[in-house]
Length: 252
Ligand code: NDP
Image (tube, rainbow, N blue to C red; front, side, top):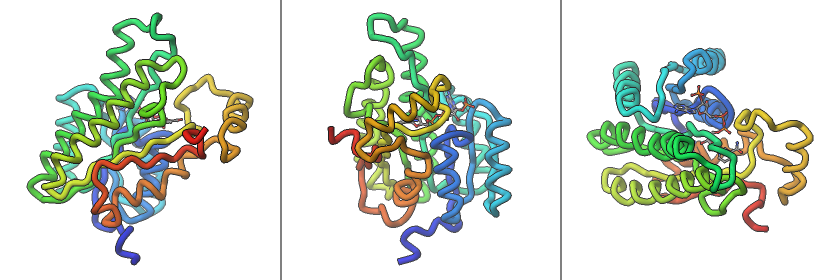
């Protein structure tokens, strides 16, 4: 039983792993035994996450990478491979909230930026990593989607469209990559308390919490179990699945 969730000897990349949900998942994977590569645009944020992971006994390396750039993604993946020799797990977590405007107000530049980060980034990282996973005939790709993949969230046409795309990309890549023993699955969080929206105050958080059937907003650690499941041998027969972790929001 213990081997089912054991990640000893595995190497995981977490995009946007320096903060919020990504950092929570990086902590969880490190706790299960994985070595971590943490990437994002702010190297110092990734370095500080790696310092914390190393202090708890994990192997960790930081890489600067903008997931919207094919060249930077390729360099990041090549660098991780050179450092660790293999890549077993990719967590596509890097994301942006988007315009937070009604659809009539969103300008095309903002639309492109949201789609580039939330959807192109998932495609670019998945393709670059999966090309390395195919020769080893094993791998796990975990996409951080959203309840916005299923429901149109208010003032979020760009965000919801991007996350709907992530869900379908998860299924499409899962279908093609399963023959290489690469499992692609998604986690769909509800409202999670991170720095995602810097304007969010304690009062707003409490207000969101009251709307959640579970009675509170989620914390990054609420996603830890699902992340370990989807990274580990326990999910070897999960192909294109999406795990909703939202405290019951989607049931209302
Ligand atoms: P954060 O803002 O804490 O995390 C976003 C991370 O993504 C940052 O570390 C950021 O680092 C990185 N990032 C953003 N753009 C890029 C880019 N172009 N290239 C590389 N890295 C990038 O927010 P969360 O932890 O809340 O969000 C993480 C994921 O979870 C997102 O995909 C989000 O959509 C999803 N999610 C969040 C929910 C929530 O309620 N918080 C709910 C549902 C889903 P840097 O700026 O240094 O690049």
